[in-house]
Image 1 (cartoon, rainbow, N blue to C red):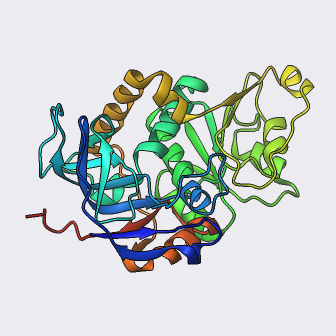
Image 2 (image 1 turned 180 degrees about the horizontal axis):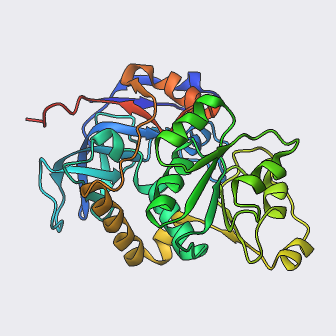
Length: 331
């Protein structure tokens, strides 16, 4: 089978397309024939050794994949060869990848495998953050920063389903149009001068009730200062550069909360609850309430360009590496 692998994490140029032996699933594992692999900003950071935890070498990128069950290990129940699944895999830049059976989930007919490849982490982050951490209520104003990205767009769509009025912040006309086309009620630019006044006007003159912030960049403090009384600011990620600081007295003055959202620890410590939320999200896809947009797709041979593009922040939604066509199921 084909894999994309690097012996060092110095640059994207270190990654090469090569032939490798077929892996076999151990007890409690499944082998997934990969159709599509999500390529997020974090995936690009990991591939360059710039994330909090460096991967062991050699490294095959890719954590989220959409594909078909090829084989199952001993003790696996509820999954059979040929099923369409989304899976958290070890090395998704490959024709086949191993996943824990607990992290392989059948997908509804309404979901493409490209959608599946970027769904689990982004949409669980959005639902867990907005419902569990922010306690978002119907009718509240939700500001989503970095709204055109993968997790930002998930928050826009989940926020709408939860009944919020969604204000999407994005840096270009193209990105703002994308947000409006996929569920945002209003959009706002990211130019700092006069930004708080424009946000206040967009949120009914009182500021947002909840902020979903995967950027935590230059607008971090202006956004928090703009919260309505009792507002909640969700810290989701730090793609905006250096980690910002916030004067502690602002929380008192606003009666507001600064809340962290870490979906990986949510999966670790509250796995059963997370599984229930994933089922709920997939139910929304099945009944047509949720239709996640697919970001730019790259051919398998263009894996380096896919990593570069994911790192650039220019994408609309989560970037996808197309490994195999999903037009027909495997033999």
